[in-house]
Image (spheres, rainbow, N blue to C red):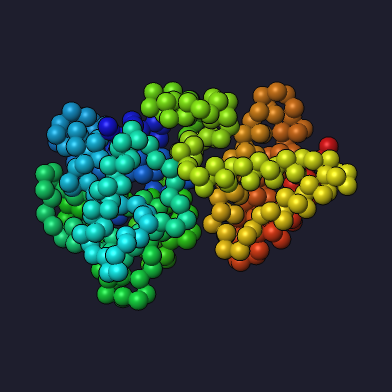
Length: 363
Ligand SMILES: [Zn+2]
């Protein structure tokens, strides 16, 4: 039971390792990039690299993989590599830092039991105040086993704002601004725009791009990945993965998002007849039950994936005009994503988006 190897991201790994060797790695980093691209895995790799007994001393660009630090880190159980990510609130009226530690330990065990594979956080999970209190407390302790302490904070935009307790908010900001010596904080986010500005201004951003095709293939060929996805045909895996194969491990919620996205694409491609029109109206009406904006955003993400995949397929089969038309729809979906931030109702948005998609895609 250990983490999967890091697939791809070679240039970033080289850069981060070089910076660490030269002593110029910022102590608070933000890895930002699309959901499912492997940001948390990359952050854990960097944590392992920083803790490794040999890599930096010996001028290697990869952790050695065999020292005690590496072995613990690869099993997700290094006491100085703290891994925090959104969770459902623990069922306690007044949860404390220790509850957060126990809950996260359990969650990490689950992730390891799934061969180090996990899906995106769902809409109800967050990084609650008591979880950040654990981080602040643990950052003030000396490392247990390694020379340093590293915190990985996945999906950092889910940190619950702490207006109600300015004191703990300030402790967090102080920690980010000036971590204790020997401490590194690595935040990851697929929605850096929604991070609190007070947090964003205190971290150095590193962009994590989508994976190259060969890296996605290598990931899909990983025996654990292949086993977990054995019920999904390989073509569908590729189409859904795009350059961000982590999305394949989404639970119910994201599979639902793909189903909705597929229905929208089908409706957009339906002919300009009264029947096609009815299909579009019905599809729009099915979107957007009240309060489902999170689901709507997930659907739009899924739609972007499908459109990218469709464009690629059309290019490969030499249908250039259709490929170009399909590529032109991607910015429309991006714009819809921006609008979701502004409280526009999902039905209205879907109806408008469907009309635009149909107009752009129709022969
Ligand atoms: Zn090592």
